[in-house]
Each structure stands twice: as structure tokens, then as C-alpha cells.
Amino acid sequence: MEITLVEGDITEQRVDAVVNAANSALLGGGGVDGAIHRRGGPRVLAACRELRATVLPDGLPAGQAVATTAGDLPATWVVHTVGPVHSTREDRSAVLAACHRNSLRVAADLGARTVAFPAISTGVYGWPVDSAAQIAVRAVRAVAAQDASTTVGEVRFVLFGREAYQAFARALG
Ligand code: ADP
Image 1: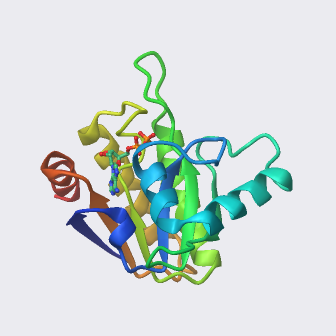
Image 2: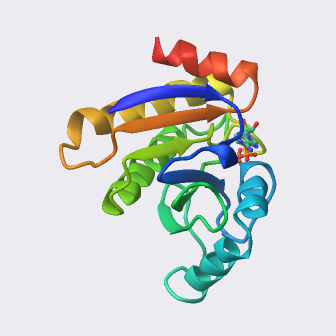
């Protein structure tokens, strides 16, 4: 599994699966979530509503992941995951790692070979980007080392801005 870094917009990535930093409601929001729904169009929202009406009546818990169509995005699927809100009182890094692990599992169950991730939790959820980058890279490397059945050959972190890009470059080493 190769890990690559791109500075840019995740909604422009031609990949099999784009990971969305969603919120539990799954009905859209700001940041990456807003951009994915804007560009993905009504089919993404309809699929999210359907999930809420059936298997996820209480929404998607932090750390878990679920897939929908990517609608009008140049990708095949959106994998929605909910990052943890950063806390200084409690270490929630296991939840952030679980977002990456579970998103990769959902993508692999669909047969995805290329998966794009944003810097989950580093926007409105307040996670310091250097710390989030280390957790994200470590979690993806752990899947690469442990999951022989994965179909995913490329994990592409798509970072908005130079600062986030450089944080992920440092985490990759
Ligand atoms: P969260 O609620 O998990 O913190 P946000 O969407 O608020 O998620 O932010 C996550 C990260 O995604 C932030 O670093 C933000 O700058 C970045 N971001 C926002 N829009 C895009 C986009 N279109 N493509 C890639 N990254 C984006």
C-alpha cells in the first residue's frame, strides 16, 4: 500500500473512494462535508438520508465508516466517517485512528484500489494538524502491515493548504 500526498481539493480526485469528514447526522455540513455534498449533488444526500431512515436512525458514531455513491464526483464511492472532536481533557486518538482503519475496510469491501483522505478532524473539530497527521499515517501503515486482504493499493492524503501538506510530509518522514 503506497501513501501519497497531494495539496489540493479532495472533490477533484479521480479515485475509487473519497473519504468524507462527515458529522454524525450524515446530512451535510461545512468544510470537506459541504464541498463533497455540493460537488456530489443530490444523489449523495439521498443515499445518506436512506441510511438514516434504515440502518443508522441515530446517525453514524465517531470512528465508524459507511459508504454511499459518489454522485457527480469524479470518484465511485464516498466513504463517510466521523472524526472525534479534539479534546485536551481526554485522549481521543484511538477514535481518529479507527476512522482511518474503518474507512479503509469499507473501501476494501467495495474493492476500491485508490482511496483519498482529507485531514480528518483538523477543521471545525479542532485537532492540531501535526498530531492528526501522525495518527492518520500510523493508522494507515498499520492497515498496510496487517491487512493482507485489502484491495487498496494507494492511500492519497489530500491536504487543503501548505501547512497541512507539510504536517503530513513530516509525519510520513
Ligand atoms: P472536521 O469536522 O473533521 O474537522 P473539516 O471539514 O472541518 O472536518 O476539516 C477537515 C480538513 O479538511 C481541514 O484541514 C480543512 O482545511 C480541510 N478541507 C476543507 N475543504 C477541503 C477540500 N475541499 N478538500 C480537501 N480538504 C479540505
